Amino acid sequence: MQLERLPVFKVIMWAGTTLNVAGSFLVASKMFFAGYVLFMVASVIWVFQGVRNRDFPLLTLNAFFLAANALGLYNNV
Image (tube, rainbow, N blue to C red; front, side):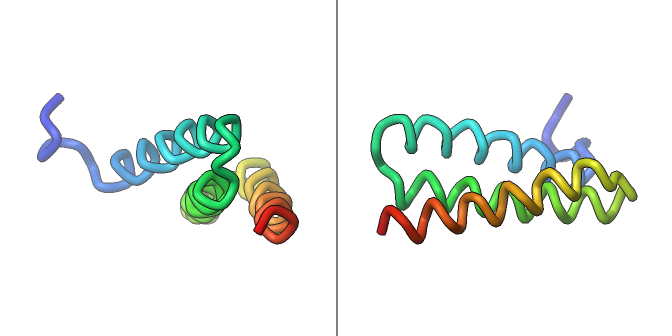
């Protein structure tokens, strides 16, 4: 599928997925600041998607991930 044919929300969802994967590799590589920032941006994207789709389990999970990653960022900076 060509990028211009993808709905914008699909692109946003793939951005959230990609940022989570990149964040996990950065944290595993001990690049904590960058990894936690990517995790937090991804969580905001998924919270947005949870609200948009009325997917409350997704929203709840990522709200807690956002809080946990903020704590991780605070403890590693």
